[in-house]
Image 1 (tube, rainbow, N blue to C red):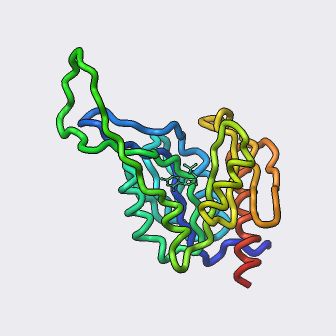
Image 2: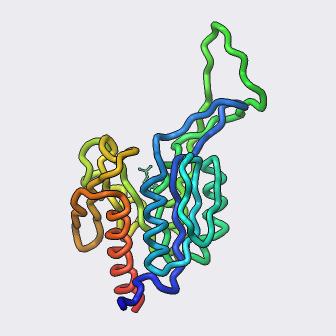
Image 3: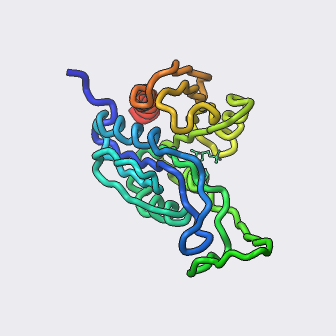
Length: 218
Ligand code: C5P
């Protein structure tokens, strides 16, 4: 029997979109099915980790992992992550966090009329950058969904957020689809995970994360 590569480790995963309320019934969000994040959480659990999954609203059933926390907004996602990050050995940020939230959302449904409606948007906190800049950060893995210059933009993002590993995927092909090609970028270079379903890609990613983590923490 192969020893499980993440046995005894605690892995924190974010998944899905966030939803930022405009009023009681409307909001702004990102396109994200949650499938990739859920597959990563499931693969980490299968590798022996104790997994906490913090998920935005997806409408699909989540995987059976040690703990699942359902959140709505980026601020709630940040708080759920902050409450758990000190315990985590590895943080994998798969969520498509909304870049902005609506200032002063209306408690009641806004009545429509013929006037122009102006929304004031304020930037959301970057959850991953907050975690990776902690004094003792867990091993941080980011995702970069890009529609052009995929690997160049992903590597810039990896450097800017000080990540040992980032997963580049083509946003125009990946969202909601069942099969994706991924490129892993780390200090050793690039590793292509050839087109496969998200469960397979998640297993390959988790094995790569385990190799890097275990090499740094013998
Ligand atoms: O949005 P961006 O392309 O910068 O996202 C890259 C990575 O950062 C992803 O792993 C995403 O989950 C994470 N992120 C985050 N909080 C944000 C924006 C992005 O954790 N507000």
